Amino acid sequence: MAVRRLPSGCDRVRAKRRLLLAGTALMGCAVLLSCSANGREAASMVPSSASLPQTASPEPGSWYLLDNGGLRKSAGPEEKSVPFLPWTVQSRFAGFLQVGGRLFLAINGWGVIALKTDGLPAPDVASFEERALFDGRTINGMYADGRKVLVDLYRNTLFDTPSPLPPPISLARINPQANSVAGEALPLTKAGWEASDVVRLPDGRWAVAWKRTTPDRVEFKYEMYAPKNGAEQAISRVAFLDSYGYRAMNAAPRPLQAINAVLAQAARRAMVIDYLVRRPALTWVDRYRAGPAKKLFSGDADLLTVPVFREGGAYYALAAGRVIAAGGMAGSSSLSDPGGARGPEPVRVRFIPLPTLPPGYAYTDLWSDGTWLVVSWERQRFTEVGAAGLFIRAVAPTVGTPAASHAQRASER
Image 1 (cartoon, one colour):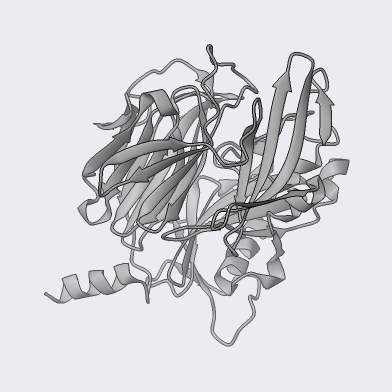
Image 2 (cartoon, helix red, strand yellow):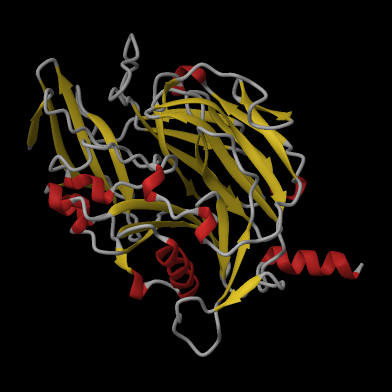
């Protein structure tokens, strides 16, 4: 069992935020190398947008503000001023998940909303709220469980301590057909312990990081849990970190290698890039790493975490304020095989422009079916977040995806 004194305070900088805290990140906190993210990047870590191939002006799209747990159409991101709060408790988008014809969006502190993907760009919103369950908790991610949705929850007290503390709840289980939301504690929940991170593995097991905070110290321990039979097994911290399963870029699919070649060429300095690849009906995340990870600790490289959504053979990555798509893209705005990706056929890369955000705002996550692109954004101030919302626009379909086939059939009618 690992024990850490509060004054040294190197709590995990959670997945779902691309936040590398300067000075804190390299204080011997190796766990940062395994953290995923969904939010912020220091300016020096992101390849300059100007260094990427230039495209035409962004196509028109629709802006939506997150307002009291729902969406309100707006003229742009600056329409409403929202007080800054720590990202652990602020109302913001904390994850996307596609199940069937619905796109589920996790809203920190509120619950989950669902959009019908065939109703875009005008969202047809269904709401799954349970304020008593979500209030005061941080959403760490969403996963599919058949036709149900699992939401990981955690009382994250890193920047804010809700008072009174809600009881330990590890999961929210949403049944869209029954329109129900229920909280669950993992079977290995123990008095005073909280599941601060859950890593789902391809074989169905979950690696769980447990945390207990007392007035003078923070303790961690790690276990492997099998939901199918309830089996538990203690594991080491190293084994838990290994459960993230980062693979080298030379083992990545060729479209992802092509995207990496673009970002690596545009980087301002040495960079380690972590790609978090999700897909419809997600049950685990595919993770790939490019660059010399050992240089992070010496300060000779920066860390960039890139959210990626895969639809069929197409990959959509969010970086440098735009979307980079690869994998049999249609259209004249593509590049052939950047960086010499392997294979007999060239990998085509397309740059999908997004509107330039005002200073202090950032795009944080994305989803696409090849026809529509949904991107979340928020206003950021170091560890705090203000206003948040969505930008939705059309995107040229990708050859070979269901969306492309649908678009082709529509054009033939």
